[in-house]
Image (tube, rainbow, N blue to C red):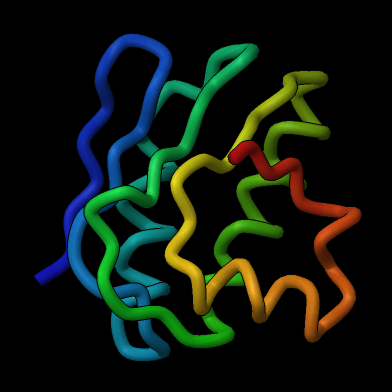
Length: 96
């Protein structure tokens, strides 16, 4: 089960972001406000695959289109490694 909880200026994702859950996460996120300096927190995410990168890039595109800045925080180690492996780390604003 995956869920997305919006709290003030933070989205907290919990569950696994995999190919079969990423689209439902994207659909759920469309209705949430995206404010400037939004943090998208992955601290409660256990498992990911490359679909998580696609989801992050879509949120980044949405932020840019609205002239907003977002940051992805607390990425699982495997997801952070994938962003480097696929050469997208420079396009996704990460925070330690």
